[in-house]
Image (cartoon, rainbow, N blue to C red):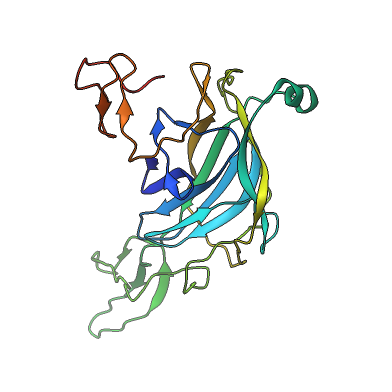
Length: 270
């Protein structure tokens, strides 16, 4: 499970969240998995999933303090193929080639832009011996100067401005916004543990199209899916409740432990 700026991303297999260590998630080859996206913020977020360097979902909308469990490629709104993780064999490499992003799940998310109350100022012309107020409304100025040298600022805090209409319920959506990929320095995946995500079984998970909204600058989290550990295939996916076994002494440790309580060996391997 990865957490960044009130956004959570986790890989799930058979409905259970898998353990993540140094952005690496171990799961057996042939597993169908889903991605849990959770918004812990007080405003809406948009998120887009890219797998093996390709966009898999388009932009999804997540309501405040809500989550979605994405289990399939969103090429159609009513149904599609589930995410399935397989080994990148020599035959696959000869036919498909090797890509730097193989095994990487990239989730780009951005927070809804919040507008502050607008400030409205007025200029008052002060004439003797009578008071004659000539209202000249201006927007965006910090203050105005009176005829006699004094300044006055009137602030209107009746409400916030928003360019889009409000949405009542949390929904997921695809956006017509074009997809732009930016070059990144990504470490080459080791061949003995490399896997890719391919279409799996058919899923009836449904999505609906809704209006977009203005957002702040995007952030990114990346997870690395691996099917082997030190050359040995992963047979059972490790969930967050799975007890950790020390490779040195065989002692069972609680799931949150970083070092073996018996011999001190690190339970997190790079």
